[in-house]
Length: 406
Image (tube, rainbow, N blue to C red; front, side, top):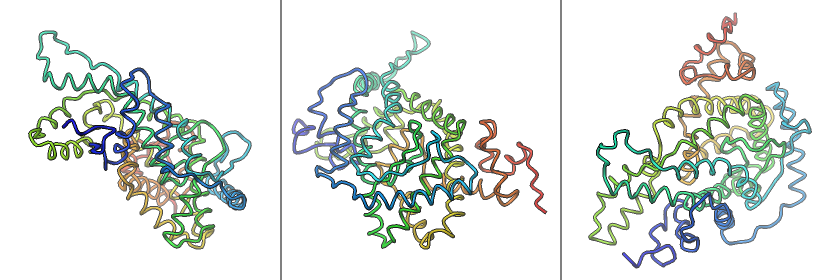
C-alpha cells in the first residue's frame, strides 16, 4: 500500500467529511508533537472556508440593512424576554462578515475547547491497578500510544477543517450554541445568507430579520451569567474528558482484510470516516455520564429561543413560517462535518434535542404561562434537570410555581 499517502494522488482520506482535508496537509506538517498546532489549524480553516478563491468585501448597503434590522430585532427580543440583550452595556451590534472573517473570529472563540481536547487526547492511559494483570492487546496499546502522540497535530488539522466547513454553512455565531468571549458584536455570514435566500426563493430582508432575531435571542440567554457559566463549564469538562483508548479501534482494524490493498483501503476509509468509531475510541464513561446534564441545558436554551422566535416572528416577519420551516429543516439535516464538531464538544443538536426543548418550554407555558419561565434566569439551581426536561411539571413543582391558571 506504499502508493497511498497524504501527498500522493491516491489519498486514503479523500472523500471523507473534513478528514479528507487531513491528507493534503499532513505530509507538510511532519510529526511534531507538543501542544495544539494552531497555525496548522488556521491554515486549514482558511483553505477550506475559501475553497481556494478570494471573497468579495461586504457591500456597505448590506451593512446598513443589517444594522437597521438588528435594531428592530433587539427591541422585540428585549420586550418579549425581559432579558438584557447586551453583555457589555453598550448595546448589541450584528455585523455582516465574509466566510474568512467568520473563520478568524471563530478560531479564537473555539481555541480553548480544542486546547482542552488536545490536552486530554495527549494524556497517557492509566496503567492497570494490578501490575500483574493482563496488559491486554499489545496492538491496542501501540495504537493508543500513537494516537496520544499524534493527537495534538491531527486534532489541529481536523479542527481547522471542521471550522472551515462550518464557515461554508453557518449563518451566524450561534448555529452551535458555544459561548464566546463576552462581546456585543454578533457575526452574520452574509454569503451564506444570500445563497440560502436564493436557493429557497426567500425575501432577503425577511431572512436577515429572522436571523438577527435568532442571534440576539441566543445572545440574551447566554448573557445570563449562570447560564453561560453552566454551558461553558459543561463544554470544557466534556472536552477535557477524552482519553486515547484505542482498544475499540484496534478491534475494528483487526477485521480489515489487508491482503487486498484496494478493498482494505476502502474499509479503512469507512472506518476512520465514521464518527461513531472515532468517538467510541476516545470517549470516556465520565463524559457519557455528563452528557444528559449538558443535553438538558442545551435543549432548554434551544427550546426557549425557538419559542421566543415564534412569539415575535409570526407578527413581525411576513414570510416567517416559510423561513422557519426552511431553517429548521436545514439544521436537522446537517452534514457530517457539522455533526462531528458538535459531538466533539458534547453538543447533540439533532431533532430529539430540539423536540425535547420545545416540549419543555411549551409544557411550562401551557401550565403556567410564559412568565413561569422567568425563574430560569434566577440562578443555576433553577435550571432544569434531565428528568425535568422530559416532564416540565416536575420542574414547576420543584420551584413551587402554581400551575392553576383559572
